[in-house]
Image: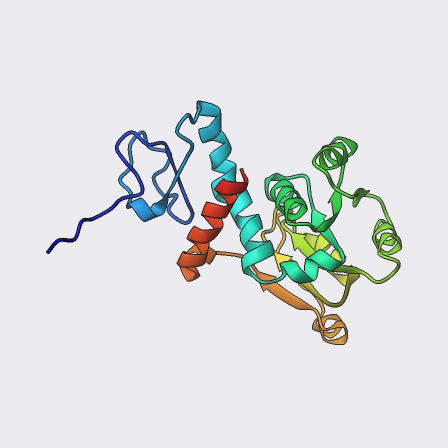
Length: 219
C-alpha cells in the first residue's frame, strides 16, 4: 500500500538490447523485459541504433574483459597486446585506450594497421610477418606484455608466449577457425593466467548490466 512501481523506460523511448538477449532481435517486433534494455539518447538516430549493435556486442565484451575481470589494473601498468582490426579487436583497442592502457595492436595488413593507428594504438605490428614477435618483445624491453586480448585463436595463440611474468591471456573467440592448444608448462613457469570471456551475461547478470550502462556512458 502506498508503493508505486517505477520504470526507467517510457513509451516511445529509444532503447538497445544488451547481451545475452539477442534471440529474435532480427524481427520487426520483439517482447523484452525492461532490464534487458539500455536507454539510448532521446534524439537517437538510425546511425545510433546501428552503432549500438557494436556497443551491445563487441564493446560490451571488451569492457567486460578489461574491467569486470579485474585484469585492467594489471594491463594498465605495462603494454597490452591485441589482435586488433576486427570488431572485437577495435572495441578492445578503443575501450583499453579510454581506460588508460598502453596498446600494442597486431593486424595482418597495412590498411588494418592504419586503422589501428587512427584509433590511437601506441604501435601497430604486422603479425603476418615471420618473426613479428620480436617487435613485441623489443617494444616491451624484452619483458613481454602484461595482457593479451585474443579474438583470433589458431596458431596466433602462441603470441601468448610473449606474455610477461604474472600476465594474463584473455581468450575471446576463434576467428581464425581453429581452436588452439597451448603448453601448460609455459603458463606454469611464468605464472600466466588464462581467462575465458564467454556467456558472461548469463553468469554475471548484474555486472553485465553495469558494463552495458558504462559502455553507453562512454559512448
